[in-house]
Image: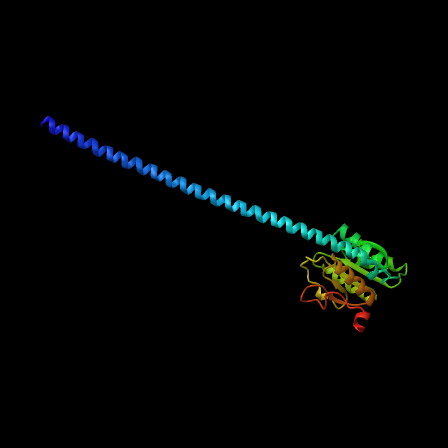
Length: 242
């Protein structure tokens, strides 16, 4: 083969090889650029989401603070008018507290409420495990001949069979019965509403007012926020007359 022709062939091969290498390198660089752009897009999106989340968190913190301030104002307001609404409403009543689960803050609040209403709290007892123990407990309490007795029961769990039998037995004694549960309780107590005053929101200001009014009026039935309730709080005679 002529040397010039071979040189020409080698030159063409070199040119095509350079072109191929350029295409390969360009493709790699172009792909890397797309990858970088995609990464930047993801980073920007994450940064924006983080900023939005941070903004919503600040808004929630502000709203929570406002709710806490509002609740504090309600608590202070209730403290100012509480004695006017419940003072001496249960004067002369003797009350026994029963509970299924120890809830010291709730029991202390309930005891303080009843005493501020003028009642005498004879004692606080865990719900006995057997009906015989319920009878023994109340026979001991009745030996002191309590005046206008009432059993106030705090519960946040479904009533046991012993509790239901105990409520029936206490009702047969002629005692007034009230069963209170916290606002967020899922327990349905409408089944005992014929024998007891059931307060669905016993850990709220309205619940406190409801139990005092209900005990004073000797009412039964469910009071609270569920579809089973006959009202939010019991109506007093003065309001009914109006």
